[in-house]
Image (cartoon, rainbow, N blue to C red):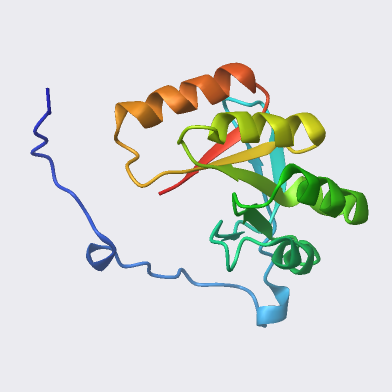
Length: 158
């Protein structure tokens, strides 16, 4: 049964980010590198917290290769085959630390995700691409992914 929530909701137009005073003299002194520890996977990540989306025009191997040089992360789109993943990994193994393999929640997506991760066990990030993050189907899919891949970090593209 649906639940009605009456508490206040904020949108981007309701929030103002006001910078605090800085002791930096130049933009060149800014350090965007951050470290993250993930509660469920127990993994960690160090890099710049910007992720190229898993769209088929953005989340490409070419983009990952370019962004990795700048410590940026890429969620690779879900249309690459297992063989394409293997080929990319053999040519650019250093990039794998800043990639997420994307998956849908449809029929066959779990099997393809499993095949990619079996072929490339060094991949540690999974991006679930879903239009309806509130659906029970999605919740069950994530539970299945967590059960099969307990040490992977799971993120969602909504």
